[in-house]
Amino acid sequence: MPVQPLYTIIGTPFSTFTRTITLGLQYKGLEYEQLATPPQSQLAQENHPFAYLPTLIIHEVDGKRVDVKLRESQAIVRYIDRIAPEPSLHVRPGSESGVLLEEKMWEFVSLAACFGFPMIEATVVKPRVAAMDEGKLTEDEIREKVKDGVIELKRYLSVAESLMAPEGFAFGPNPTWADFFLYPLLADLRTIPEWEVVSPRLVTWMAKMDGLPAVQATAAGTLSVGARP
Image (tube, rainbow, N blue to C red; front, side, top):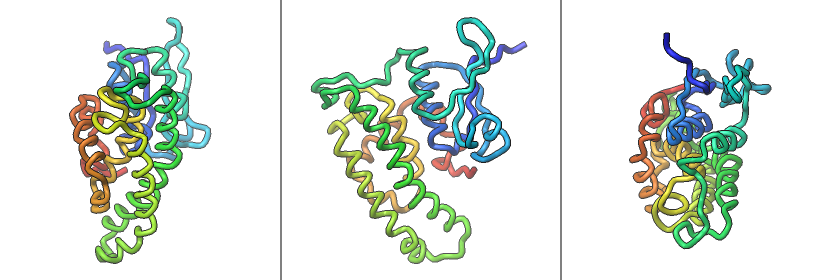
């Protein structure tokens, strides 16, 4: 009889925040079961007070069966770091990372979650994909529909790039949570024509991220491979 993994992630692979968590679980080698469901579904309602994604169900604590539900991405990543500190997804201050404080990584994470998501997904990616799927608007009409969003998109990307190291991952030679929060957003953006506004630095960063086994293992079911919710 197969042994159930210690963790269950509630959330469709299509969800960018869910993918952030599965990227971390994959990178740290933690086995998990994923129950794919969209936000506001019955399963989401049963596991999150506002029916959003993701929820991590922790089935065991200190050898005892508990089934604790941990919600919200930034709480989940702190738990993952605590129970699996290595390989580290934290930034090491110094010349390689280009930062003096390790908290700069959490600043980047918060900016991606609070500003990157609405400025990329809500105003550009989602309306663009919906319009293309519906097939009623011309390309010029779609571009007009998202043009204000593209202005905000450019603004966010400029800020994100200004906080990154000049090469490598977001903060130098090793991936961090900053990379895992930003990557799902840009992976979605890469599927639409508005990707054309992305800078060479971010294009190079994406190529580096694409090579990570964790990225490859979490691609199925995402917009980046043509999936839908």
